[in-house]
Length: 354
Image (cartoon, rainbow, N blue to C red; front, side, top):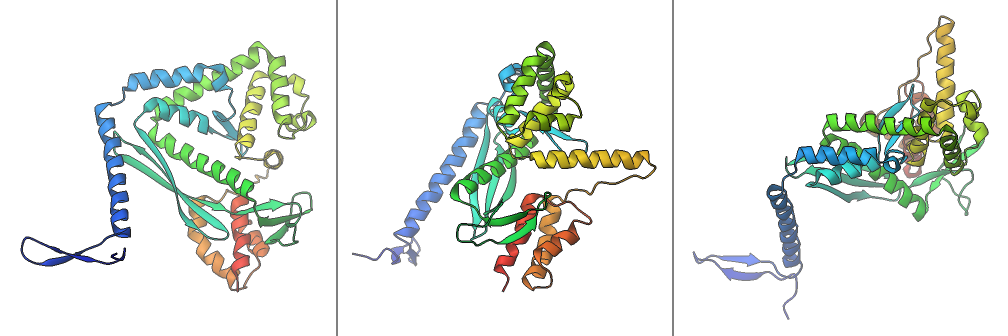
C-alpha cells in the first residue's frame, strides 16, 4: 500500500511529469473545496433573495414595541462610566440581524496558550460584501478572594475594601462564561456597524418609551420588579436607596428606567455594582470640586486599541524585572483608568517572566 505522504507522478499533456499529493493533502483540498462552496452558496442565496429595507424597518420596530423585548436587560443598557454610557445590547443586535437577513456571523479561535485565547469574530453583510472583523482576547485568569486550592496564584492586589484579591487560573465554567460574554460584546459592536444608524436611533427611542410607559402606568409593580431583579445579583434594596440618594419608593419613572438600564449592564457583565458606586462617588466628588471653584477631572478609561499598542513595551518591563505588575499598574493609573481585564493581563505577564 502506498504511503499517505507519497507523491505520485502524473503525466501532463506536454509530456512533463508533476507530483500530485495524496492522503492528507487530498483531504485538505476537499475541506477547502467544501468551504469555498459554502461561501459561494451564501452569497448566491443573498443575491437571489435580497432584503427589503421597509420590511426590515417594520419588523425591527415591531420587535422593539413588544414590552417583553423592550424590558429585556440585554436589549438596552446603561454603563456607569462618567455621566453614563447608554447603548443597544446584544439581544437587540441579534433580533435586528435576524430581521435584516443575509448577514453572516462567524467565530473562530486563532490563538491559545496557558494564559490567553484569541477569538476572531467577523460579521459580514452578504449583500453589500462588507466584512467587519475583530480579535477578542480572553484571559484565562479570574480574580478571587483567596488563592487556588493548592495555594497558588498569579498576583495579588488590594481591593477597594482593603482586602486581598488574588488572580488565579479560571475553571472551565469561568472561562465558558467569560468567553461567551466577550464574544457577545464583539458581535454587538460589529453588528451595530451593519445595522443602519437611523434604525438604531428609532429603536432606542421606542425601547425607552416602552420602559417609561410601563413605569408610569404601574410604578409600584415596576419598583418591585427592579428590586427583585437586583436581588438576583446580590444587590439589596438599601444599596439601591444609597445609589439613588432617597428611598426607592420615591423613584420617578425616569429613575426606574435608569435602574433598569444599570441592571442590564451588570447582568451582561458590562459593569459591577462596585463600579456603579465608584462612578457615583466620582461624579459627586467632581460636582463638589466644581462647586468649590476647582474642577476635578476623571481619568479617561484606556481603550483596547491604546492598550494593545503599549502592551509590548509594558510586558518587556515586567518580564525584565524592572517593575512589579502592581507598580506598573499604579504608574499607568495616574493617567488612565484600566479595566479589570487589562489589570489581569498585566498581572499575568509576571508568570512568564524568567
